[in-house]
Amino acid sequence: MAKIRITADAVSEVMGTARPNKTAFYFDEDLAGFGFYRTPGNVGTFFAEFRPIAGGSKKRLKLGRIGTLKANEAREAARRAIANAALGKDLAKDRTDERASVTVKTLVSKYIEEYVAANKKPSSAEFYRIMLRKHIDPRLGTTKATALTRIDVQRAHAAMSKIARISANRSMKLLSAAYGWGGKNGYVPEGMNPASGVDLNKEEGRERFLTADEMMRLGDAMREAETVGLEVKAGDAKHAPKGQRVKMHPAVTGALRLIMLTGCRLREILHLRWSEVDLDRGLAFLPDSKTGKKTVLLSAAAVAVLREMPRIGIYVVAGDSAGTENEKPRSDLKRPWAAICKRAHLEGLHLHDLRHSFASVGAWSGLGLPVIGKLLGHADSKTTQRYAHIADDAARRGADVIANQIAAAIGGR
Image 1 (cartoon, rainbow, N blue to C red):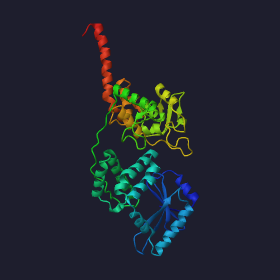
Image 2 (image 1 turned 30 degrees about the horizontal axis):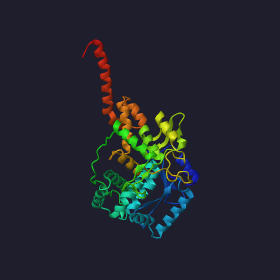
Image 3 (image 1 turned 180 degrees about the vertical axis):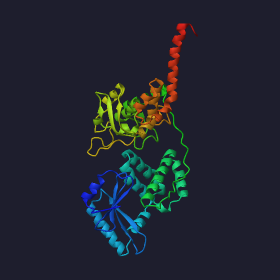
Protein backbone atom coordinates (compact mmCIF):
# COMPACT_ATOMS: atom_id res chain seq x y z
CA MET A 1 0.00 0.00 0.00
CA ALA A 2 1.33 3.41 -0.94
CA LYS A 3 0.15 6.95 -0.30
CA ILE A 4 0.30 9.53 -3.07
CA ARG A 5 -1.50 12.68 -4.10
CA ILE A 6 -4.01 11.20 -6.59
CA THR A 7 -4.07 13.42 -9.66
CA ALA A 8 -4.38 12.70 -13.36
CA ASP A 9 -0.61 12.95 -13.83
CA ALA A 10 0.17 10.79 -10.79
CA VAL A 11 -2.25 8.07 -11.90
CA SER A 12 -0.85 8.13 -15.44
CA GLU A 13 2.69 7.80 -14.08
CA VAL A 14 1.76 4.79 -11.91
CA MET A 15 -0.07 3.04 -14.76
CA GLY A 16 2.98 3.55 -16.98
CA THR A 17 5.39 1.69 -14.71
CA ALA A 18 6.11 -2.05 -14.83
CA ARG A 19 3.07 -4.19 -14.09
CA PRO A 20 2.84 -5.47 -10.50
CA ASN A 21 3.00 -9.18 -9.68
CA LYS A 22 -0.11 -8.77 -7.53
CA THR A 23 -2.78 -6.13 -7.14
CA ALA A 24 -1.25 -2.89 -5.83
CA PHE A 25 -3.23 -0.32 -3.81
CA TYR A 26 -2.66 3.44 -3.71
CA PHE A 27 -4.39 5.78 -1.22
CA ASP A 28 -4.79 9.53 -1.43
CA GLU A 29 -2.72 11.68 0.93
CA ASP A 30 -5.51 14.24 1.46
CA LEU A 31 -8.86 12.37 1.30
CA ALA A 32 -8.86 9.40 3.68
CA GLY A 33 -10.55 6.39 2.12
CA PHE A 34 -10.05 7.50 -1.50
CA GLY A 35 -7.74 5.40 -3.63
CA PHE A 36 -7.23 3.18 -6.65
CA TYR A 37 -5.78 -0.25 -7.31
CA ARG A 38 -3.88 -1.70 -10.24
CA THR A 39 -4.05 -5.39 -11.21
CA PRO A 40 -1.32 -7.50 -12.82
CA GLY A 41 -3.38 -7.21 -16.00
CA ASN A 42 -2.78 -3.43 -15.86
CA VAL A 43 -6.41 -2.57 -15.08
CA GLY A 44 -6.82 0.36 -12.71
CA THR A 45 -9.96 1.07 -10.66
CA PHE A 46 -10.84 4.00 -8.39
CA PHE A 47 -12.56 3.18 -5.08
CA ALA A 48 -13.79 4.65 -1.81
CA GLU A 49 -13.44 2.92 1.58
CA PHE A 50 -15.60 3.78 4.58
CA ARG A 51 -17.35 2.39 7.66
CA PRO A 52 -21.16 2.71 7.32
CA ILE A 53 -21.62 2.53 11.09
CA ALA A 54 -19.07 3.46 13.72
CA GLY A 55 -17.26 0.30 14.71
CA GLY A 56 -18.71 -1.67 11.78
CA SER A 57 -16.72 -3.46 9.11
CA LYS A 58 -15.07 -1.38 6.43
CA LYS A 59 -16.61 -1.45 2.95
CA ARG A 60 -15.07 -0.70 -0.41
CA LEU A 61 -17.12 0.89 -3.19
CA LYS A 62 -15.83 0.70 -6.76
CA LEU A 63 -16.19 4.07 -8.45
CA GLY A 64 -15.03 3.32 -11.99
CA ARG A 65 -12.15 2.27 -14.21
CA ILE A 66 -9.11 4.45 -14.80
CA GLY A 67 -9.45 5.75 -18.34
CA THR A 68 -13.23 5.85 -18.09
CA LEU A 69 -13.39 7.98 -14.95
CA LYS A 70 -11.10 10.99 -14.48
CA ALA A 71 -9.11 11.41 -11.25
CA ASN A 72 -10.96 14.59 -10.21
CA GLU A 73 -14.34 12.95 -10.94
CA ALA A 74 -13.35 9.91 -8.89
CA ARG A 75 -12.25 12.18 -6.00
CA GLU A 76 -15.62 13.92 -5.95
CA ALA A 77 -17.51 10.62 -6.10
CA ALA A 78 -15.41 9.27 -3.22
CA ARG A 79 -16.04 12.42 -1.19
CA ARG A 80 -19.82 11.96 -1.60
CA ALA A 81 -19.69 8.26 -0.71
CA ILE A 82 -17.62 8.88 2.43
CA ALA A 83 -19.84 11.80 3.47
CA ASN A 84 -23.02 9.75 2.98
CA ALA A 85 -21.52 6.95 5.08
CA ALA A 86 -20.90 9.44 7.89
CA LEU A 87 -24.61 10.37 7.72
CA GLY A 88 -25.64 6.71 7.90
CA LYS A 89 -26.36 6.14 4.20
CA ASP A 90 -24.58 3.12 2.70
CA LEU A 91 -24.14 3.66 -1.05
CA ALA A 92 -22.49 0.27 -1.45
CA LYS A 93 -25.57 -1.44 0.00
CA ASP A 94 -27.87 0.66 -2.17
CA ARG A 95 -25.95 -0.40 -5.25
CA THR A 96 -25.99 -4.06 -4.20
CA ASP A 97 -29.75 -3.93 -3.54
CA GLU A 98 -30.32 -2.32 -6.93
CA ARG A 99 -28.26 -4.96 -8.70
CA ALA A 100 -29.94 -7.80 -6.83
CA SER A 101 -33.31 -6.72 -8.24
CA VAL A 102 -32.34 -7.22 -11.90
CA THR A 103 -34.15 -9.73 -14.08
CA VAL A 104 -32.54 -12.62 -15.92
CA LYS A 105 -32.87 -10.67 -19.17
CA THR A 106 -31.06 -7.67 -17.68
CA LEU A 107 -28.33 -9.84 -16.16
CA VAL A 108 -27.57 -11.64 -19.42
CA SER A 109 -27.79 -8.40 -21.40
CA LYS A 110 -25.35 -6.64 -19.06
CA TYR A 111 -22.96 -9.59 -19.31
CA ILE A 112 -23.05 -9.38 -23.11
CA GLU A 113 -22.68 -5.62 -23.36
CA GLU A 114 -20.26 -5.01 -20.49
CA TYR A 115 -18.05 -8.09 -20.78
CA VAL A 116 -18.47 -9.99 -24.05
CA ALA A 117 -18.65 -6.90 -26.27
CA ALA A 118 -15.53 -5.49 -24.58
CA ASN A 119 -13.42 -8.66 -24.55
CA LYS A 120 -14.55 -10.91 -27.38
CA LYS A 121 -15.25 -10.69 -31.09
CA PRO A 122 -18.27 -8.64 -32.28
CA SER A 123 -19.67 -11.79 -33.91
CA SER A 124 -19.67 -13.54 -30.51
CA ALA A 125 -21.58 -10.69 -28.89
CA GLU A 126 -24.13 -10.71 -31.72
CA PHE A 127 -24.55 -14.48 -31.45
CA TYR A 128 -25.22 -14.16 -27.71
CA ARG A 129 -27.76 -11.40 -28.33
CA ILE A 130 -29.63 -13.76 -30.66
CA MET A 131 -29.58 -16.53 -28.02
CA LEU A 132 -30.95 -14.09 -25.45
CA ARG A 133 -33.66 -12.76 -27.73
CA LYS A 134 -34.82 -16.07 -29.19
CA HIS A 135 -34.44 -18.51 -26.31
CA ILE A 136 -33.63 -17.08 -22.87
CA ASP A 137 -35.82 -13.98 -22.76
CA PRO A 138 -39.11 -15.62 -23.86
CA ARG A 139 -38.89 -18.26 -21.11
CA LEU A 140 -36.86 -16.77 -18.27
CA GLY A 141 -36.41 -13.08 -19.06
CA THR A 142 -38.83 -11.57 -16.53
CA THR A 143 -37.74 -13.76 -13.61
CA LYS A 144 -35.64 -12.04 -10.94
CA ALA A 145 -32.07 -13.24 -11.36
CA THR A 146 -31.75 -14.05 -7.64
CA ALA A 147 -35.02 -16.03 -7.67
CA LEU A 148 -34.20 -18.33 -10.60
CA THR A 149 -33.89 -22.01 -9.66
CA ARG A 150 -32.23 -24.94 -11.39
CA ILE A 151 -35.65 -26.52 -11.93
CA ASP A 152 -36.77 -23.35 -13.76
CA VAL A 153 -33.69 -23.53 -15.95
CA GLN A 154 -34.04 -27.25 -16.66
CA ARG A 155 -37.68 -26.78 -17.71
CA ALA A 156 -36.73 -23.84 -19.92
CA HIS A 157 -33.99 -25.93 -21.53
CA ALA A 158 -36.49 -28.70 -22.26
CA ALA A 159 -38.82 -26.19 -23.94
CA MET A 160 -35.94 -24.71 -25.98
CA SER A 161 -34.85 -28.18 -27.05
CA LYS A 162 -38.18 -28.80 -28.79
CA ILE A 163 -37.27 -25.98 -31.18
CA ALA A 164 -33.47 -26.19 -31.44
CA ARG A 165 -31.48 -28.75 -29.45
CA ILE A 166 -28.02 -27.29 -30.08
CA SER A 167 -29.13 -23.69 -29.53
CA ALA A 168 -30.74 -24.80 -26.26
CA ASN A 169 -27.33 -26.02 -25.08
CA ARG A 170 -25.63 -22.83 -26.20
CA SER A 171 -28.23 -20.78 -24.32
CA MET A 172 -27.52 -22.69 -21.11
CA LYS A 173 -23.80 -22.04 -21.45
CA LEU A 174 -24.50 -18.34 -22.00
CA LEU A 175 -26.79 -18.23 -18.95
CA SER A 176 -24.18 -20.00 -16.81
CA ALA A 177 -21.45 -17.57 -17.90
CA ALA A 178 -23.72 -14.60 -17.15
CA TYR A 179 -24.31 -15.84 -13.60
CA GLY A 180 -20.59 -16.40 -13.08
CA TRP A 181 -19.92 -12.84 -14.18
CA GLY A 182 -22.89 -11.54 -12.20
CA GLY A 183 -21.56 -13.08 -8.99
CA LYS A 184 -18.24 -11.28 -9.42
CA ASN A 185 -19.98 -7.96 -10.08
CA GLY A 186 -22.61 -7.99 -7.36
CA TYR A 187 -25.72 -8.75 -9.42
CA VAL A 188 -26.27 -12.14 -7.75
CA PRO A 189 -24.71 -13.79 -4.69
CA GLU A 190 -21.25 -15.08 -5.54
CA GLY A 191 -21.39 -18.81 -6.28
CA MET A 192 -25.07 -18.73 -7.28
CA ASN A 193 -25.51 -20.37 -10.69
CA PRO A 194 -28.84 -22.12 -11.41
CA ALA A 195 -27.62 -22.98 -14.94
CA SER A 196 -24.73 -25.04 -13.59
CA GLY A 197 -25.30 -28.79 -13.75
CA VAL A 198 -28.28 -28.63 -16.09
CA ASP A 199 -28.64 -31.79 -18.20
CA LEU A 200 -27.74 -30.79 -21.75
CA ASN A 201 -28.70 -32.47 -25.00
CA LYS A 202 -26.24 -34.95 -26.40
CA GLU A 203 -24.27 -33.47 -29.28
CA GLU A 204 -22.71 -35.65 -31.92
CA GLY A 205 -20.18 -34.42 -34.41
CA ARG A 206 -21.89 -33.88 -37.75
CA GLU A 207 -20.10 -35.26 -40.78
CA ARG A 208 -22.11 -34.62 -43.93
CA PHE A 209 -20.27 -34.36 -47.26
CA LEU A 210 -21.89 -33.83 -50.63
CA THR A 211 -21.34 -36.48 -53.27
CA ALA A 212 -20.59 -35.54 -56.87
CA ASP A 213 -24.20 -36.34 -57.81
CA GLU A 214 -25.54 -34.17 -54.98
CA MET A 215 -23.31 -31.28 -56.06
CA MET A 216 -24.69 -31.55 -59.59
CA ARG A 217 -28.27 -31.50 -58.30
CA LEU A 218 -27.50 -28.49 -56.13
CA GLY A 219 -25.92 -26.69 -59.10
CA ASP A 220 -28.94 -27.46 -61.29
CA ALA A 221 -31.30 -26.11 -58.61
CA MET A 222 -29.30 -22.88 -58.27
CA ARG A 223 -29.28 -22.30 -62.02
CA GLU A 224 -33.03 -22.89 -62.17
CA ALA A 225 -33.58 -20.53 -59.22
CA GLU A 226 -31.70 -17.63 -60.82
CA THR A 227 -32.96 -18.10 -64.39
CA VAL A 228 -36.56 -19.33 -64.65
CA GLY A 229 -37.19 -19.30 -60.91
CA LEU A 230 -38.46 -21.92 -58.49
CA GLU A 231 -42.13 -22.75 -58.30
CA VAL A 232 -43.83 -21.41 -55.19
CA LYS A 233 -46.05 -23.90 -53.40
CA ALA A 234 -48.22 -23.56 -50.32
CA GLY A 235 -46.01 -22.90 -47.31
CA ASP A 236 -42.92 -22.01 -49.33
CA ALA A 237 -43.19 -18.23 -49.03
CA LYS A 238 -45.23 -15.71 -47.09
CA HIS A 239 -46.26 -13.23 -49.77
CA ALA A 240 -45.45 -14.74 -53.17
CA PRO A 241 -48.47 -15.96 -55.20
CA LYS A 242 -48.76 -19.73 -55.12
CA GLY A 243 -48.23 -21.67 -58.35
CA GLN A 244 -45.91 -19.07 -59.85
CA ARG A 245 -42.16 -19.08 -60.21
CA VAL A 246 -39.95 -16.71 -58.26
CA LYS A 247 -36.43 -15.88 -59.37
CA MET A 248 -33.67 -15.58 -56.82
CA HIS A 249 -31.35 -12.61 -56.77
CA PRO A 250 -27.92 -13.48 -58.22
CA ALA A 251 -26.35 -12.28 -54.96
CA VAL A 252 -28.04 -15.20 -53.20
CA THR A 253 -26.93 -17.95 -55.56
CA GLY A 254 -23.55 -16.23 -55.86
CA ALA A 255 -23.13 -16.39 -52.08
CA LEU A 256 -23.87 -20.13 -52.07
CA ARG A 257 -21.37 -20.74 -54.85
CA LEU A 258 -18.71 -18.76 -52.98
CA ILE A 259 -19.21 -20.86 -49.85
CA MET A 260 -18.83 -24.02 -51.93
CA LEU A 261 -15.77 -22.76 -53.82
CA THR A 262 -13.87 -21.24 -50.88
CA GLY A 263 -14.90 -23.31 -47.85
CA CYS A 264 -15.66 -20.07 -46.02
CA ARG A 265 -18.21 -19.83 -43.24
CA LEU A 266 -21.59 -18.24 -43.95
CA ARG A 267 -20.89 -15.02 -42.01
CA GLU A 268 -17.49 -14.64 -43.64
CA ILE A 269 -19.20 -14.46 -47.03
CA LEU A 270 -22.22 -12.39 -45.95
CA HIS A 271 -19.98 -9.80 -44.23
CA LEU A 272 -17.38 -9.67 -47.02
CA ARG A 273 -16.94 -6.16 -48.48
CA TRP A 274 -15.86 -5.36 -52.01
CA SER A 275 -12.99 -3.32 -50.54
CA GLU A 276 -11.63 -6.55 -49.01
CA VAL A 277 -11.48 -8.42 -52.34
CA ASP A 278 -8.53 -8.33 -54.74
CA LEU A 279 -9.71 -10.06 -57.91
CA ASP A 280 -6.44 -9.50 -59.77
CA ARG A 281 -4.41 -11.36 -57.16
CA GLY A 282 -7.19 -13.76 -56.24
CA LEU A 283 -7.34 -12.86 -52.56
CA ALA A 284 -10.01 -11.95 -50.00
CA PHE A 285 -8.90 -10.29 -46.77
CA LEU A 286 -11.18 -11.13 -43.86
CA PRO A 287 -10.58 -8.70 -40.97
CA ASP A 288 -12.72 -10.56 -38.44
CA SER A 289 -13.26 -14.27 -39.08
CA LYS A 290 -14.02 -16.80 -36.33
CA THR A 291 -10.29 -17.41 -35.91
CA GLY A 292 -9.32 -13.76 -36.34
CA LYS A 293 -7.85 -11.90 -39.27
CA LYS A 294 -7.12 -14.15 -42.25
CA THR A 295 -6.54 -14.16 -46.00
CA VAL A 296 -8.61 -16.43 -48.26
CA LEU A 297 -7.07 -17.75 -51.47
CA LEU A 298 -9.60 -17.37 -54.28
CA SER A 299 -9.58 -20.00 -57.01
CA ALA A 300 -10.19 -19.04 -60.62
CA ALA A 301 -13.72 -20.41 -60.26
CA ALA A 302 -14.37 -18.25 -57.18
CA VAL A 303 -12.98 -15.16 -58.94
CA ALA A 304 -15.29 -15.85 -61.90
CA VAL A 305 -18.29 -15.97 -59.54
CA LEU A 306 -17.24 -12.69 -57.93
CA ARG A 307 -16.88 -10.98 -61.31
CA GLU A 308 -20.49 -11.95 -62.10
CA MET A 309 -21.85 -10.69 -58.77
CA PRO A 310 -23.83 -7.43 -59.02
CA ARG A 311 -22.11 -4.51 -57.27
CA ILE A 312 -24.95 -2.66 -55.53
CA GLY A 313 -23.47 -1.63 -52.20
CA ILE A 314 -20.39 -2.09 -50.06
CA TYR A 315 -21.03 -5.79 -49.39
CA VAL A 316 -20.36 -8.54 -51.92
CA VAL A 317 -23.67 -10.19 -51.03
CA ALA A 318 -26.27 -7.46 -51.42
CA GLY A 319 -28.89 -7.29 -48.67
CA ASP A 320 -32.17 -5.37 -48.37
CA SER A 321 -30.34 -2.16 -47.39
CA ALA A 322 -27.72 -2.41 -50.16
CA GLY A 323 -26.71 0.99 -51.53
CA THR A 324 -28.30 2.96 -48.68
CA GLU A 325 -26.54 5.23 -46.21
CA ASN A 326 -26.96 2.79 -43.31
CA GLU A 327 -26.23 -0.39 -45.26
CA LYS A 328 -25.99 -3.60 -43.28
CA PRO A 329 -24.88 -7.08 -44.38
CA ARG A 330 -27.51 -9.66 -45.21
CA SER A 331 -28.44 -11.55 -42.03
CA ASP A 332 -28.94 -15.06 -43.42
CA LEU A 333 -29.86 -17.27 -46.41
CA LYS A 334 -32.39 -19.52 -44.65
CA ARG A 335 -35.39 -19.19 -46.99
CA PRO A 336 -33.56 -19.37 -50.33
CA TRP A 337 -31.33 -22.19 -49.07
CA ALA A 338 -34.35 -24.20 -47.93
CA ALA A 339 -36.04 -23.70 -51.30
CA ILE A 340 -32.95 -24.72 -53.29
CA CYS A 341 -32.36 -27.81 -51.13
CA LYS A 342 -35.98 -28.82 -51.56
CA ARG A 343 -35.72 -28.49 -55.33
CA ALA A 344 -32.48 -30.50 -55.34
CA HIS A 345 -34.04 -33.17 -53.08
CA LEU A 346 -31.41 -32.55 -50.41
CA GLU A 347 -33.60 -32.08 -47.34
CA GLY A 348 -31.62 -31.90 -44.10
CA LEU A 349 -28.52 -30.44 -45.73
CA HIS A 350 -27.03 -27.58 -43.70
CA LEU A 351 -25.22 -24.58 -45.13
CA HIS A 352 -22.17 -25.45 -43.04
CA ASP A 353 -22.07 -28.84 -44.80
CA LEU A 354 -20.83 -26.96 -47.89
CA ARG A 355 -17.68 -26.05 -45.95
CA HIS A 356 -17.22 -29.69 -44.94
CA SER A 357 -17.71 -30.73 -48.56
CA PHE A 358 -15.00 -28.31 -49.70
CA ALA A 359 -12.61 -29.90 -47.21
CA SER A 360 -13.62 -33.45 -48.12
CA VAL A 361 -12.90 -32.84 -51.82
CA GLY A 362 -9.47 -31.53 -50.86
CA ALA A 363 -8.76 -34.55 -48.68
CA TRP A 364 -10.00 -36.98 -51.32
CA SER A 365 -7.77 -35.28 -53.87
CA GLY A 366 -4.73 -35.95 -51.69
CA LEU A 367 -3.90 -32.35 -50.77
CA GLY A 368 -2.94 -33.26 -47.21
CA LEU A 369 -4.35 -32.04 -43.91
CA PRO A 370 -1.96 -29.05 -43.45
CA VAL A 371 -3.03 -27.61 -46.81
CA ILE A 372 -6.71 -28.18 -46.06
CA GLY A 373 -6.33 -26.57 -42.64
CA LYS A 374 -4.69 -23.53 -44.20
CA LEU A 375 -7.45 -23.18 -46.82
CA LEU A 376 -10.16 -23.43 -44.16
CA GLY A 377 -8.35 -21.07 -41.81
CA HIS A 378 -8.17 -23.51 -38.90
CA ALA A 379 -6.28 -22.03 -35.96
CA ASP A 380 -5.72 -25.48 -34.45
CA SER A 381 -4.46 -28.43 -36.51
CA LYS A 382 -6.60 -30.76 -34.38
CA THR A 383 -9.71 -29.27 -35.99
CA THR A 384 -8.58 -30.53 -39.39
CA GLN A 385 -8.15 -34.08 -38.07
CA ARG A 386 -11.86 -34.77 -38.67
CA TYR A 387 -10.94 -35.17 -42.36
CA ALA A 388 -8.07 -37.58 -41.65
CA HIS A 389 -9.98 -40.71 -42.67
CA ILE A 390 -10.75 -39.16 -46.08
CA ALA A 391 -7.10 -38.22 -46.50
CA ASP A 392 -6.18 -41.83 -45.66
CA ASP A 393 -8.44 -43.04 -48.49
CA ALA A 394 -6.65 -40.71 -50.90
CA ALA A 395 -3.28 -41.97 -49.69
CA ARG A 396 -4.44 -45.57 -50.13
CA ARG A 397 -5.47 -44.84 -53.72
CA GLY A 398 -2.06 -43.29 -54.30
CA ALA A 399 -0.33 -46.31 -52.81
CA ASP A 400 -2.34 -48.62 -55.10
CA VAL A 401 -1.39 -46.58 -58.18
CA ILE A 402 2.32 -46.74 -57.30
CA ALA A 403 2.30 -50.39 -56.25
CA ASN A 404 0.36 -51.51 -59.35
CA GLN A 405 2.92 -49.87 -61.63
CA ILE A 406 5.81 -51.48 -59.73
CA ALA A 407 4.06 -54.86 -59.67
CA ALA A 408 3.50 -54.67 -63.42
CA ALA A 409 7.19 -53.87 -63.96
CA ILE A 410 8.47 -56.76 -61.84
CA GLY A 411 5.90 -59.22 -63.03
CA GLY A 412 3.91 -59.39 -59.82
CA ARG A 413 0.15 -59.73 -59.58
